[in-house]
Image (tube, rainbow, N blue to C red; front, top):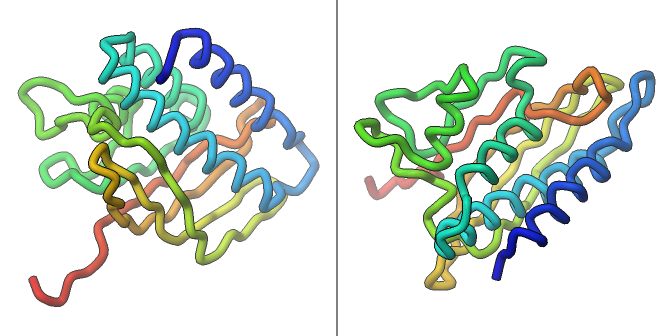
Length: 178
């Protein structure tokens, strides 16, 4: 059960986790893994708050603002469930994908009742100012079943030294039967 207090704690934890990468220091693989964990917890919190009738929109706004590089750098975001508006170059387009917008194809990926996000990295490559990770992430639905999604994320350091996502591409696995 998500409460406002636990959301504030989670937001504070996000700042603590991501602030450990200062300019001039290489981005560590652990910093990328920590950022992935925070991203997944954010998705679950948004889903939980939506189900509870809490202010999920504010939590989603915080999720996009704190984890994506909109305003700091160009962001290339190709979400999984997007066909008409495939690429989300702006903050508002990203937010729409996560929580939905009436009259658009966006039904709100982050409000689908996800209870867990687990990551299996195929590789993480880091430099002093950028990082890339690719693999699969698995979203557990309210029925307990996992949905496998392939992803590639790129990260840059924000002016404050935090890791921010500047590349997010995800897709459903190829199905030769289709």
